Image 1 (spheres, rainbow, N blue to C red):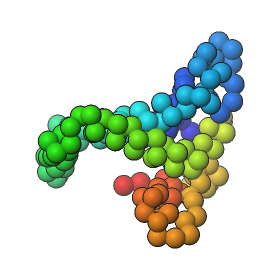
Image 2: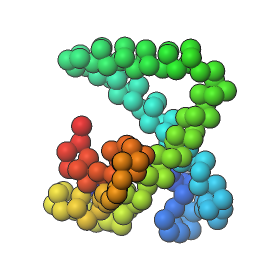
Image 3: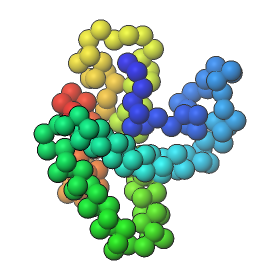
Amino acid sequence: MGVDEDIATDPFLFQWAPDPENDSPLRKIQHLIFFIPFSFLFALWRFDTMVVAVDAVEKKRTGAKGELFALLGHYAFLLTVFPIGVWGPAVLLSGLMSALIVTPTHQSEALFEDYQPDWVVAQYLSTRSAVTTNPFSEWLWGGMQYQLEHHLFPS
């Protein structure tokens, strides 16, 4: 099925021990350092968003310039209002929270080693949505509880 870059944390975190030639010394302490790669995932997602937006402008996609200007305005506002000493840790904390929510709904994707000819069935077998029982948990998950729907109908 390939690699979902949203949760690509190796060589820092592994579900199971890889082949010895691909093993990392960090795997032995991953239970102590898991929050570090998780925290940086959010920063990576922000960077990837900018790369996609710039690429869309270069390809002259309709509305791409507006999206790019909105993103640039958003980050200019954040960096103007919040000092880097607040903004940096906030991004890392957001990354940890997001990764702790997203990872349990994605990790079964790595269980497929062979090609899956039926993409829809593969999504049903590998993606997990989460049940939220109150408005606070709905807010906390921020829509990420609908991973199956997201994978079937990506936006």
